[in-house]
Amino acid sequence: MKKYTFTEKKDTRSGFGAGMHVLGQQNPNVVALCADLVGSLKLEPFIKENPDRFVQCGISEANMIGVSAGLTIGGKIPFATTFANFATGRVYDQIRQSVAYSNKNVKICASHAGLTLGEDGATHQILEDLGMMKMLPGMTVINPCDYNQTKAATIAIADYEGPVYLRFGRPVIPVFTDADQKFEIGKAWMVNEGTDVSIFATGHMVWEAIQAGEQLEAEGINAEIINIHTIKPLDEEAILKSVEKTGCAVTAEEHNRLGGLGDSVAQVLVKNKLVPQEYVAVNDSFGESGTPAQLMEKYGLTAKDIVAAAKRAIARKQ
Amino acid sequence: MEIEKLEKVASQVRRDIVRMVHGCQSGHPGGSLGCTEILVALYFEQMKLKEENGKPVFDMNGEGEDLFFLSNGHISPVWYSVLAHRGYFEKSELATFRKLDSRLQGHPTTHEHLEGIRIASGSLGQGMSAAIGSALAKKLNKDDRSVFVLMGDGEQQEGQVWEAAMFAPHHEVDNLIAIIDLNGQQIDGPTLKVMNNRDLGKKYEAFGWEVISIEEGNDMAAVVKGLYEAKSRLGHGRPIMILLHTGMGFGVDYMMGTHKWHGTAPNDDQLAVALAQLEETLGDY
Image (cartoon, rainbow over all chains, first blue to last red):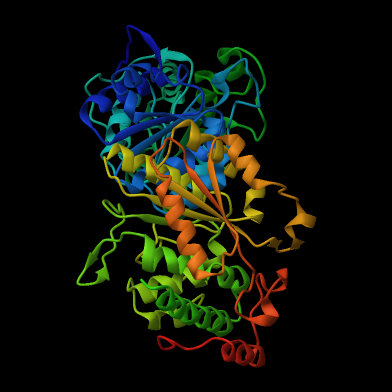
């Protein structure tokens, strides 16, 4: 099994900010928009170098989505940024009509997704965003796993023509992927090959899955771990190839178990290859205040929970 | 174009509107009839459009041309008719309005690649934001043409409109002319009763807009004059708002001054009465 180590911890939102900094220098059509959360989205380096290509929208997310859609009509590539809750649920109809149905080249970039936003509590901890965004026809949905991958994904989506939802978060987590990686939209990343169980993880849960893999190995279980950074379009081939070998699956996501990665994988399995699947996800509830670590523990989103789910899945194999 | 010629176009557009809505027994004739003068004036007189051999050439980015956005998308019949007569697509296609496999969807969309349309509208309150975005793009692209957007007065009840209203003056979007169709009617009745907008002019002025009024929004000469007046005020740091006073259902006597024809189609007899009041000037589709 491949060992993953890290020398530093960083937040994925800083990966986004770093990606925007690069895009500001490389792509003159990239425009950044923000709804009064410039510091949280780490946009300062972009704004400093490209003040004319930054649009402060104030606390008006609906208008920000519409202005973004309009900017594409002049050939611009708008990156509309705010917290995930305000970037999706609050403006669902604006995204649906002005962006997705109109097929506008808008990049909706959402920080502070999921429980790991922490102390602000459930009002800000959206756990339904992946579901809402993946249901929109034509929307690409990406949830990278660490700082480097978020930076690479940010740069990659500027070259892709079409609406994208890019989800990232607030807590500092290990940086374990390559700094110079090329991000391929829709192409799952094989973290570790294995034979006994397939663990499909996304976002912050990928590091948890790696740790779970090590714990499982110590118990003689050989887990395959795959990073599904693109929820839509889903890499069905990679999923099926993996379960053909392992015969069972675990999905891990910082999201409601309804409508997220787990359901996307389940659809693929039901249609093509029926194998047992166990969900590691929030059990159809809202979050609450607490530290990120406390919340991940309480809501069952840790390496320990993935280990337990893997054992359940293996036990259900016939 | 001379006022008389514009009026002739308007008469044909009105015939198209009632025939289209009658043809599929659905759609919104009232607001469409009320906004006929403004759309004809914009497309046949005021807006600079990209053209080849006298016909408009559509490209999504619209660089170097004036752009129009329809925020109250339910008045699609008037827009479709004007686009067809202006030459964006064959007027025979108007017969497909709201029918299966048509590019002329109930509410305008880019999804079917209909020439002339740059964003979907229908869910209200979103068009001005998009227009502002395209106006900002023009500024970034050093494109000195302007952007027009039409909204309904009932639509002013949507919160997003006021987010956009605050944004445009703050960012000095002075290449934008917004127009409100003040017909005083919405689905459930007179706007005064459903949700009183009170003084929209004062509201927009307080938000930092330059506000002008066209009192006779169904008088072609008055509409053209008002548009010239609005254009003369562009480029001075403030967005322009035109309060366009129209009559819902204007041009068909039994549809005028009531909300009842907001979203109702005429039957065969009613169609005949309407067409008798509207001269066929450019040939029916």
